Amino acid sequence: MVAELISVGTELLLGDIVNTNAAFLARQCAALGLSVYHQSVVGDNEERLAEVLSEAMERSDVVILSGGLGPTEDDLTRETCARVMDMPLEEDEHTRRRIREYFSGTSQKEIPESNWRQAMVPRGASVLDNDNGTAPGLILEKNHKMLVLLPGPPAELIPMFQKKAVPYLRRLQPEVILSQTVKLCGIGESKAESRIQDLIDAQTNPTIATYAGTGEVHLRLTAKARGAEQAEKMFKPLIKEIRKRFGTAVYSLKEEETMEMVVVRLLKKYELTVTTAESCTGGMLAARIVNVPGSSEVFSQGLVTYSNKSKRRLLDVNKATLKKYTAVSKETAREMAMGGVLASDADICVAVTGIAGPDGGTEEKPVGLVYIACCIRESVVVEKHQFRGNRSRIRELAVINGLDLLRRCILDHYAGGGHHS
Image: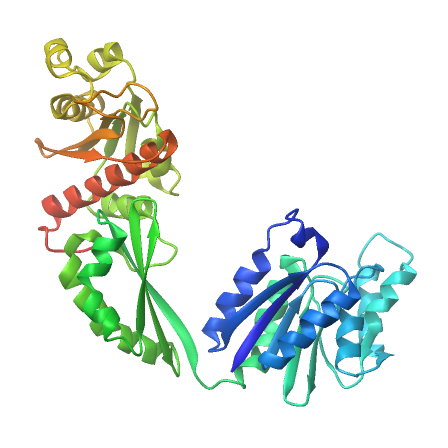
């Protein structure tokens, strides 16, 4: 069953408003097993909307429209759909009563005349009551085609779609499409893809695809199944094989879980505290950790030691080390991490020092050179990285790799190295 999305509104077309509705509806359609091959954005123009709608109906079984159901003259979705479907508008007493009830609960005494337009419903359409506004949603069915009309404001569209439209759409497709994300860190997209190329080549159901993020790679597994339980069974052997191939590079199986969430969860699990010692990242690593609710239980302090003087004073980095190896070196990173533990009395310290650019690089130590160290249980691991990109990207990559080193060190010392987060 093929679905198509049409977003209506000149403000979307001009980029004045970000079209979050389309992203939401696309995900919902996938979950319902509806295949979405086309999306359109059209301004508040009746003829252009009619043209786009006619094209959509030729190639799709279900067309979902969002926006253009308001009370003003430029809200044309209802009228245009009624004309294209040849379903004349007539007043719906139920909707009129709901509009009256809506306004009775506000401080506005008189109902604007324009709002009564929203009580005009195409003959034979099903009305989706709006519990958060005055514009009702509508479902128009004719000649094996279905139009679903939804209000534009997300606060109205989302609950209406989930509570009112989904039951209609669910009966169209017995199977659903469900996804499972596997998140990796410390490996590039092309390398990750080459490691599972045989799985990609052999895919039927579920399928597997790679997506690159900043310093991360996400594998999206997608299955067509009769329900979540069946999909989970289909994902299980594939996830087991991915874990076998990538080991601790797999850091989460949850779409909404970030690296810092995983780190805070592990710190809490093993009752550990952490401090950060940062140079080139200037506090970004600490900020990511404290973004997580509950991080106050595990985060000791963040030290931003940008200058050599502050590295010596706050982290007890040896003056001779800085002179011989410079601030950007594995030796300095090591001493920063060890000094951070002593300065804060935390269990662990992650330290970052590097050259974020655009200036300051040399042939021997180019822009993007970053050393990350983690001191835990009196042992120190130092990793050397050569990142590419502008100043902002280099700093972001340093942060995500710092968090990942912290995660892996916790697993190595407290989960025997073989466990996964």
